[in-house]
Amino acid sequence: MTDEPTELPPSLLPYESWLEEAQRQVAMRAFAHVAEHGLPGEHHFYLTFRTDYPGVHIPSRLSAQYPEEMTIVLQHQFWDLKVDEDEVLTVGLSFSGIPATLVIPSGAIVGFADPHVRFGLRMQPRPFEDEMLDEAEADEIGTEETAEEPPPAASETPQVVSLDAFRRRTTPKE
Image (cartoon, rainbow, N blue to C red; front, side, top):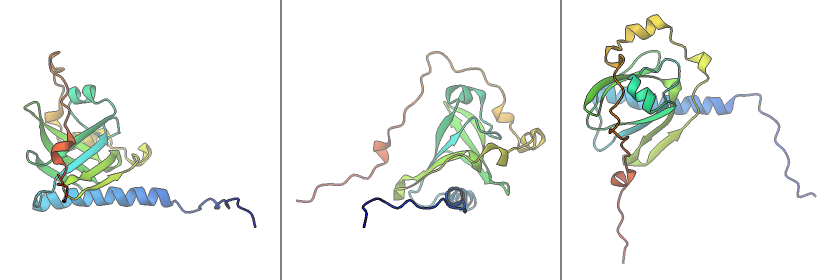
């Protein structure tokens, strides 16, 4: 008997990509539920996505500030949340008091969390060739709010959100 670990054969089934798609579906179903019924109780979402992913439409000032990845919070002040049949999320948010519409294909999502119930998912972006929106479709979505904006003032600094405010406090039992 040897102590050498036996090497598993390579899988001929794409389990990893199936798991990634299942996680992406959980996030999209949560968004669709909230779009239809609103956020229940204290639930709120953190959504992390690739800003450089094909089909993502955000204001140019946000693209400049977050050239690769961005996290948004859907809690109190968002509007027009929609999930279409092509799994594209559209949501209105305000950044430094300026309203904007964000368009996020599900393939761009790399993180989803609901801190209220300590639930979170991490995934890789879907390969680009699976998620191409042609320019006509992008124009139909309605991105007038995401038109070119002036760059932020030099004195404007990025805001860092501390997650400590959202964590449950536990008191030591004596």
